[in-house]
Length: 246
Length: 246
DNA sequence: CGGAAACTTGAAACCTTTCAAGAGTCGTGG
DNA sequence: CCACGACTCTTGAAAGGTTTCAAGTTTCCG
Image (tube, rainbow over all chains, first blue to last red; front, side):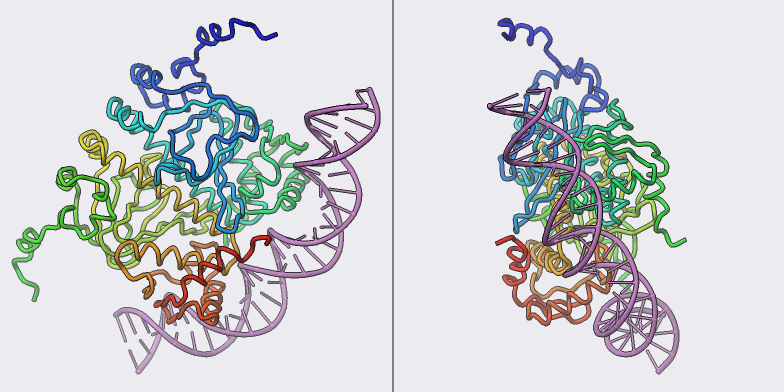
């Protein structure tokens, strides 16, 4: 029942970095039209994964830097005990895979939380591409840098009280969604309570309770996986002035 | 009483990357003799700081990547509440400053825990230097990558039980000291209990108690700031097989 | 040597987890 | 279209680990 001319259509509608709707948040952001064109030819495009599929696994050979086109992903790692931690998450336009830079092997696993498409800058191309397009070099540094500071923020958040952690998570998610042109108010979660917990260092029960509590405070509405942010300012106040020794 | 010919002597004894004793752990690690020579000329050398001095402060303009020659430093950040977190620490041969890559401004403050000397690759040089010395590009990526995975490990450690956190900290410190040719057994701490606590997400009292407890288990000897690691394997077992649902 | 800062130690308080059971949601198939 | 089973989420009560508060002790540095 699928049209037989599938491949031709795909070719015709070929998405390049130039016409990708994420060009102002993804790699092209800091690059000239010409630079983008240059990169676009070497980027492998439109891989598609289903919920639960791995983009890569802990221990895998580093194959390249990935840019998410659509969908969300989580980064997870196991410690020596086999405990699971979620060390990060990714939205459309965000880059992942940097955890493979240190050793040529990935330190974390990345998996799709829903149907997901992504592009890839192959590892072998990175060096040469950076030499040809110096601005790409700078952009990549900017992106690893952001990944780093995001992890720092994540660490700091994970040290706070449970309510602050959940509030901080919602705000971060909301802001990152907004930056990507998606609604930062009507949020459709792709994370389970368990995922949120593992990301924040809480149990799923605690996440559930806090979400309830935020709802009863009138800051959000929670319906299973949909969260409506009602009062972003008050949510922020939870993080800004709750505990400082006034 | 200091010799007047101070400057001449310094010039004569000029430390370059080539004769720096950290060349096998610092940037030169992956580079050819010729490449190192090239870099060495552009690296600013031998800045000296005293305990408590800042290498840079949160919000400062990004000036470059720093390599510690001697001494230790801690990275700290403040959240919106003014709470302090220690997000990392650095030993001789380690690179820091990557938290300034994302925004041109540093997301953390770095400060010396003791008298400290360091070298600097100025920000303006990084791009051109990477273009001239492609291996440097790869090395820098390797280093940010390691910084990233170190932070991931740090996050995971900070989610575990108090005893495991302290044990993990000691092991990490020990391993990193060993890698740099320093003793990983006789450790002279430059961190206060408060610092260790802020790094691990514990209070100083808890750190003190756990250290005592590790001592009474015969795993370490603690005398104020000197720690002697007596049984590294048992210390590791604390992290590896304590909590897994056997 | 003296004072400030860092560290130790104890007991009570507090927050989050754990354990347990029930309710809701989703997808599949009758 | 409803039923079933699996999975996810909610809710409660008790347990547990870490923090907090408080008071000493030691160490460091001028």
